Image 1: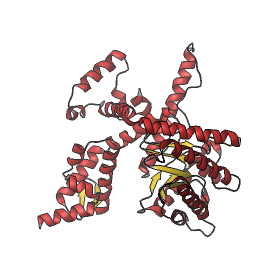
Image 2: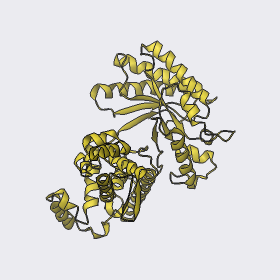
Image 3: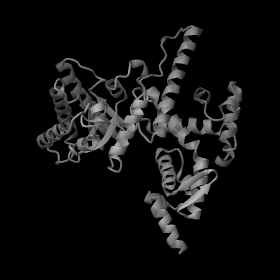
Length: 406
């Protein structure tokens, strides 16, 4: 069903009857990986099983406790109490070992109307958390500052960090931040320049990531609600400007989220056939949108993104695994040929490969390995050694091979 909805390669050959599905699954389970690859169902089988294993092992890699748009503007007493409660839940998660590897809090923006509320929430949250954990923060903890438009907002958060570190006995530089790219002003200023690097520098080395805010950005660009999606061309423009501005800086980049949830409109135990059909169609439509949006991000070189609901996670992993697995054989052939020849450039089939393309192919395997789409053995099938893979540089690989040949 997953393969048919997403139209994964070979989906038209898959059975629909429950018995036939069970028979095919049992047959595929008994095959070796090499044998399985010869079957029409290979991609669907592989993607499905990788999704299940990922959800069982580590469904969520990164998490933000959201006091901005996801929380909304509420009475001060309510936000104060929620900040304390959220700190308590995070402390429990740290104690039980149940939090995600990366975690943080998104506060309200440092605009004139909301800056005092953002400062207050962060102060209350961190104070309560550190009191309950004996002064310890979770690993990879960050503070997300949304709707940044000027460097001074980043500098203000740095000064706040310094006060909080001093007040709570944290070592200087402990607190890290990330910014959101969600306003046209952060892509181009009034003088026609991209201010992103100035904004990053204003963090004085504390900013580690930049995340795209799809809906705020499209709204700031004048896009009407119906067309505010991750696939809109104005988002592609913002993505490219961000990648160009921050390329080579080590700043972690992430795409935005799909706001269509895979949740049926009808609830209850005694639904009619028509209501069940509407639920199924609604969920499948959201599946398709999430899958295509994540694939679009991957094509544009953004390998991380956000989800708003747990039911969206399977489609993120479906898109990621499908993206890498469906291109594996072609990339394997091209990189293996390239490495074997160890030349400046080479013609493989009808696609001309040069050293830059070799780096792109190496990046493909590194990303595929990192997300779990392929194994280390499948990378080594390219003819590269572990040391060469770890170098992450195709130029160094070629240089080393030429020295060996000399």
